[in-house]
Length: 246
Image (tube, rainbow, N blue to C red):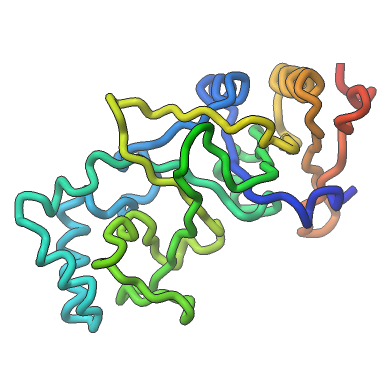
């Protein structure tokens, strides 16, 4: 059964692998913000990297003078330190992405949280902002997007190569305070949990209980005869768990 109950109303989602840290984040309702060295793309949050800085400075040659101006105008001592105080938390606009399910949930062993609002942080004005995907010459693949580093230098933290565009990523960038990488969820933002069809019994039972206790819809992916990602409902927020779940 396709989850048409929220396909048109959900705001944003986030994929998780089945680690003890991600279980703790779910049970205690917080997001973890990552430093650059913990991201899976070595070119991500480019302000941290000597090699990437040099790559970006070459943009002057490739015909993007605004970017080159911004970087050359930064004090030399700040070029590599400018973004070290930042951390990021990534989200996706689609809970139906087969590639995301494959590698971010460890081959459908994890889960995807579906949120009803884009204002996901408790007591914070930090906003979700779209990642800008660019080609090899740093030109956005979306012709409607203009990058202005002088007005918004933090945009450097939201640029990724077009190879990653299938992720449909949005992210929140924060400045770390006292090395605190946790941020609480805003109240009542979770509308559904989708678990992968390879989830182990213990995690399925734990998440089912969590959804029951918090009045959350629960769904699960299902292998189909086609390449479509089938998702069916295990429990409705107003009903008890599906009888297959103990």
